[in-house]
Length: 233
Length: 111
Image (cartoon, rainbow over all chains, first blue to last red; front, side, top):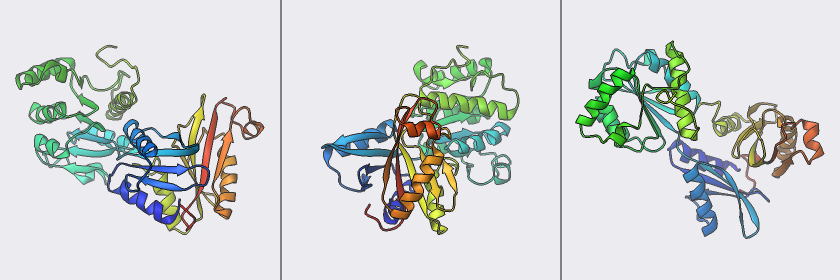
């Protein structure tokens, strides 16, 4: 990979564009999709690799090509710059997620509490969420326990294709939350998307342990693992 | 992405620091290979390593091949598997099989 190609690839990744690198294994010749024009079969292979987020070797007219997708980073949006968020954010960063924390209470969402590398947003959750526009590579977790903050964020999340939506709170808290969301007009199948109580059942007690159980559940959802949630365990 | 996972960014940084860098990438696996296709190992001529292409079984052999690629600029496609005596030598005892592409990073060689 020569200097110019590496610079193009890193520029695209830095800008959050979905690109794929196609490498001819016989001699190392490379193309960057979609910037470079490609023969139809390779174009389809690049699109398929991006869609499945899986690298693959493909053959085109008897020549082997390696197709590697570079999708934008997965995102984690956390509502509530609380103690658990302080443990969750660095863990998610280490797992490759871009982390945004929403909390309009300015005493909570401070750089002193979260360090650099985490995006802090102090807008009201529904506005912030609408602006962030969760997509199918986004996980959303609400942690405030406060319906005024959590509910508006959940309403936006449940109308988005976010791959994971989790809400902190006991079964009883969640039952009340589900009733409020139903009243707000969300259908039962949307409300059923919420992972609550949030996280895998690992007996978590401390904030880092709860963060671990949440991240484990997010990874399991992302990878399609057949794990019991706390609802079924 | 954290540095620990963004091997390309680490490799690009090494290159900017003036290092000679090769990039090894898992391009195909069969059986119980520990790292999926697309996994990177970046190697410098000075001996720095980032990432992995196996559970640590073949990194030594890949680094050795990478030094040759850094010197010549020519990419290599390496085959590791239980049918290959070399795999036993380098310790791919997990029974998996994989192909690793090794290329020089940076420079002006044909892309």
